[in-house]
Every structure is written in C-alpha cells, then in structure tokens.
Image (cartoon, rainbow, N blue to C red; front, side, top):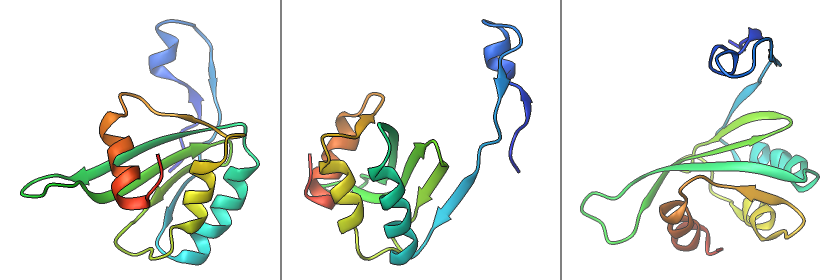
Length: 117
C-alpha cells in the first residue's frame, strides 16, 4: 500500500515535507522488465540496490534487483526473469546516472551476473 502524508523521517529534519504516493511493482517476466527498462532509459537518474547470496559461492548469486525512478520502485526477481538485456542496456547508458549506496558488492554482482560494470 502506498504511503501518503508527511515523511516521518524527513519531518525530524524538515517539518512539513510532503511524500508523494510511491508505486512498487514486482517484475517476474521478460516483457515487464523490458517495459520498465524503456522507462528507465528516459530517466536522468535511477537508484539501484541488490540482494544476493554469497554463502558457499565464489561469485554472488542474484536474489533481487531493486530499482527506483520517477515511476516508482521496481523489484526484479532474477529467478523468474531470463532476459536481462534491457537492464544491461540501461546500466550501460551513460545518459542515465546510477545512484548506488556502498555499492562495491552491487558492482561485483553487475559484473558477474549481468556482464556490465
């Protein structure tokens, strides 16, 4: 359910900051990933985070891609999606700024799983 109202965390710093409705989508197929990738190609910046398993493996195994843009939050299930070429194209696009917090392991996953850095 989208959150509406005042952001309680931001309220502590800047009283009265409005929060827009944020849509969260789960992507579980190639067509839906391609549709979102076309949207991300039009953005000036996107935020990316990943979840992965590294237990008993040399390389990280992708568990979830989380991508935020003006269109909302998107959760990409790498166990259901099989064609990541649209996401590779977005990550390789120098016109789209990628915002990643503490991303050394995210970058390793991009390189190992998607073949992009």
